[in-house]
Length: 311
Image 1 (cartoon, rainbow, N blue to C red):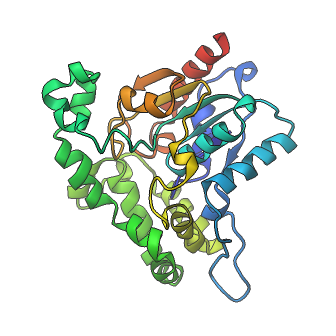
Image 2: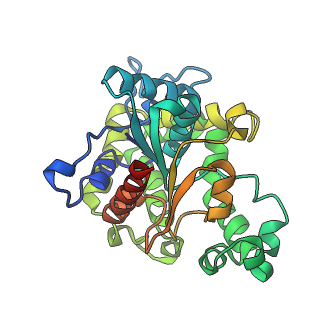
């Protein structure tokens, strides 16, 4: 099962696992949207979607586990990025005996970021367990881990505190909604695109695919509920929930895409996922890996599954 992110298009996930495979090797694949992101039901006479209080990643994980169980899958692999990463992590925490393997292309790692280790890494990286590639992707640390994140996380602060404020405005304007979403596809794909007049959107995506994604939110009126999901998960703060402090003890694979918002070295990922059996530095790609580079992601998923099956 592949769970993905905000505001990524639905069909990008199926593309990621159906690249150049023989019919006999194709997995049984479930590609699912987080319920609040764009599969909600608008209220009557309103372009807004109700989301119950405390509907967070744990509640979502419970729903998707029940879905897989009712579909007849007692053991399965799961893959995720962005919110999908956290939801898949929660599934692996709740029902580890049913998860054959967990593959991620984003890890929510906070423990190591707030220590002196990253600050010393550029000078003493090898002694601290960093590779040359880690050092290249992490440093200068102040620029890449602080200034860059601050530039790209303005949306997060408002969605985690007052999501309806911006959500109602976006539900009232298709042009405003398009601008809000397309800006993410520009800078989260490659932050250098920020300097381009057209945002570099057509360097990785077709306008048809991007507009399809926007129309999913517009026609269903679900941008508000997708933003409320941030508040339900982050409204009380970070590292206040038990699952955030729990490790994951299922075979894990990780794809490190070079243009991801923040690079997570293997050393960091192993803190949360001690059974990490596959860690790959990807050739290219950013936050929307399944949409940008489905072939690369598919290759790494298959490599991970092959390793997990041999254990």
